[in-house]
Length: 363
Ligand SMILES: *Cc1c(COP(=O)(O)O)cnc(C)c1O
Image (cartoon, rainbow, N blue to C red; front, top):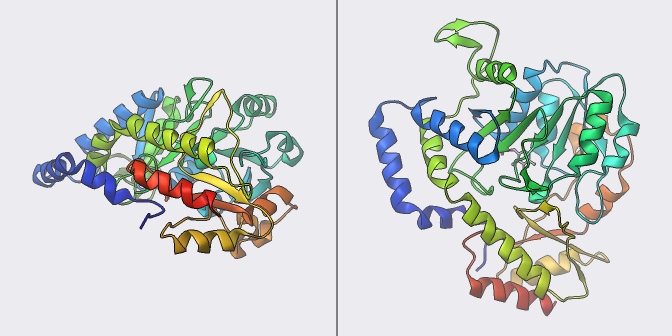
């Protein structure tokens, strides 16, 4: 049986270190926003090459806090893609803003930057660029738009820890970047956690207020804030796993390159990759043409291979977001019926990888 994702395999691989870290944290008598969080924030900032990071409770909360820290409010418009996790849009709607959807490119699933300008209005208060599946968006063109219109840029890096655009890590191009450490992400803990990174000290200070009741000091609030804190157990686990991120990413990339090289089935369309982007393959997503997707998924299942669909319903067609359905998104809608995420995670064995390739080639 080959699972679609397998975070437990990462625990087994690092069991000794993780078990001893958990014991250490439990015996420390400090459980929320302590040394482990502080160390992780520093190490993570260093890893991506940015000045400040604030650990928070999830990737969704990271986006909510980023939007709150630039005072996004009711009626403001946020430009983003519909082809992303529900979480990206949930965060926009949570702060009362309106998602304005832009279509994607068929070959690599990232936002079609050439279609952004048409969607900018005087209510546009931010762009959220999603490095979907671990593949960087077209950052150079996006920065030009950001500068021309002076719109804050938020990078949703929840699937792209360690990805690079022209040798520079994603998460360092925008005003903020938001990461998730959900168990199956490229860097994941065994629960919910996230981080917001920025080069701006003022914004960083604001993020720290907003994640904990607006406190400048314990019990002294400067402004209202909620509880979106990161805890010591998850930060401790992340401190261990961060050291393995490059190794795990390299394995995902290696597997992806095997798929690209050896999957020959004419019925399967492979993703395109760009020479100046380092795609970290959080997901390896192929397209199945001619309404054959269900056949393909059932065929894989019969062979004990479990695939996923990310995402079967584009956000602009999700019930709670239908009222924001301001435009047709033909490519988003077309590919949502074709995409299949085939298993790709660091601890897939060579035998499993070969089996997946063989089975697909016989489809
Ligand atoms: C996972 C994910 C999120 C949300 O992260 P959580 O930690 O699950 O809240 C946001 N955006 C994208 C693109 C994601 O994949």
